[in-house]
Image (cartoon, rainbow over all chains, first blue to last red; front, side):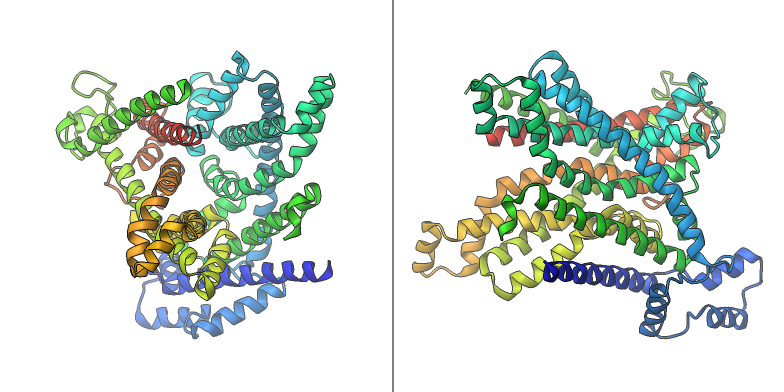
Length: 308
Length: 269
């Protein structure tokens, strides 16, 4: 057991090291000079001497592995460095953004899960009836909608056509509504498709046939089916976390939600390396941790596959 | 049997629609009513009319022509990306499955690590760092895309390798390359191609999402995501400049997703 846990922890560290090294190397090799961007943004005339001094100050002249090593050790100590743009420490900014992003993503995930769970159970109970077809068509369509498109269409309908919401939302509950809906719609579609398939798979198992033959009430059968499908549902959710993270960057940019995604989009154009690296490492850790947990939970809930 | 027949008809209908779409976009030069890049100060934000069937945008450019030309960019980029990932992934998967050993272990370990990256997060960072441009966005999405093809091809090769006809070919003195190309490849093509088809919709969403963020195509090249992003600013005055490219995107993704689904069902029946 301890050996297994250590193995997982080692895997986690290796993946994050490789991910950060790749992105760092890419930043190193990519065109675009942060020193130059910063000087032009400040309105300083760019001469060779000023540029070299600025590069020296930002530590851009050191060799690649020295820079990566320095960055790595300060991140391990919890220091994400100083922004190239305004000399403020990056850590607090990132975590403030992360908090807002979590508010957005967790509420979208919760909404999608509740909706898709109810609808897929409903759809399985009335298989091949009109409700089932309706749920299937709706989930198919919503699965095909890119979330930036949903948000633009929502803005058009709710803010401009029907004037239900102000066009520029504040950071309150009302401001949360449209971003959450935009993130939830495609995710709900995917969840329904996968949950419905898993429920139907369970329904075709022998134990359900047996229960039916014994005249067990549908309520109890469904209870068992759901319990047995739970492990699979965790995997489905974990697989969507990556898409959700990407989607939140898009949605935050559109709705000006002050999350980590909007922060990184603002930083990409300014070549603010510490912010980009911090974003990759934080989102990467969350993603890898969630996947590891879902693996463990999946094995705990369905021990059949755990022998290998 | 009846179900199979029904699915077959659906596949034919969908394929015809897809071909029609490809024809419309690749032949954009013939079908477009106007020049997609020609600006016109006299016709800024004109509502749909006979001259401009989908209206015009902020610079007086014909939205209908831009949707057709933009479709060419979106669809061509998606097909190219899926085709390249398909090629690389299938090649790697076949090698791993056929030869096994250290090569297999190393490549599959790399695949595991790539899969452990959050795809869209990496794509946004990479596309941003590489700085605008369609090729940057395609590289960013392609980094993780080959893995599913490699895994699928590997598992099928693994099974095929032990079939009697492969053994027979080996005894007959055929080379490994000959066996891979003539016996293994044609046999795993169907499942891997089906996977490619189901990837088209997701890839299109990813690519147009990156373009929407300004990390994809560089203006003035037309692309649906960037058209929607541009026209979003004046959606109050000219909603058609957003609605038509949006409609085109949704219809195209639904079309490809549905075709993928039906073919999957057909193969299972």
